[in-house]
Length: 318
Image (cartoon, rainbow, N blue to C red):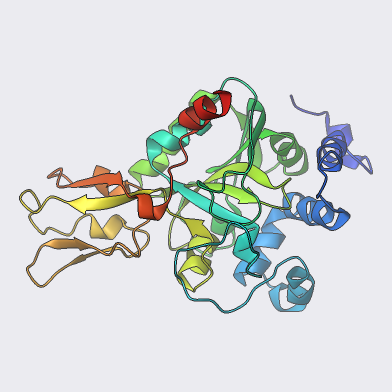
């Protein structure tokens, strides 16, 4: 799957042509979308660094960056229109929280799939399709969010780029920071990040052909998406689950609170753990961190529908 080193010096590389061809086949994918997607994939560390404000050139290049992002002040309601654009960058760039088992499903698909307009699962106006071409083509990329930090969480190579044309594009243009991995290796990365308390998000972006392209493993201290979400740009959707505390088993040790990346857990007046249902994203990290087995997640229809690829594939086939 790798390209020879000579391809790095071509004006238009094979992976770039493949990416352009995929975009050309979409009716509403404009030249601006393609340029945006190319810049995002070609220079992700510059792009993310500017977006987070961490890059030295952030102030100078911010006006150019804003040409591709539409933002306005909003309240974090957790609700998104599936029919009307809000003007927020979250419309076309967002993540869906997933428990570990759901994330594993996405990196172990063994056949091409195409599921369009998942408005009940991905509650945004744009970028809500799952189209997996060559789903076993997976690249582990050094996380641009972590790489922009002075003292980042480690390891760095925990962003999983899944399927084509994305995996090939990233591998070809980021040869020093990306590596091809097997599905088993992808599962291992997810399990290890889960053990560290990091949240799995399936990311979607309109400029990346309007569909799913990556699974990121996110921490509050480094992740630009979590930071933006907490500042009022609701670019992360709930898994569709909520954490629930079993009061009879909870001993109020608060060990789970240290692992919650969204600040949804806190000891209440009765010295028992409580869940802020507005903040909880149903990622299930706390469930695995409770030695007393006093936390579990349950379906929460008001929070949306889980992204469980096996069920979605079955529904699409019926």
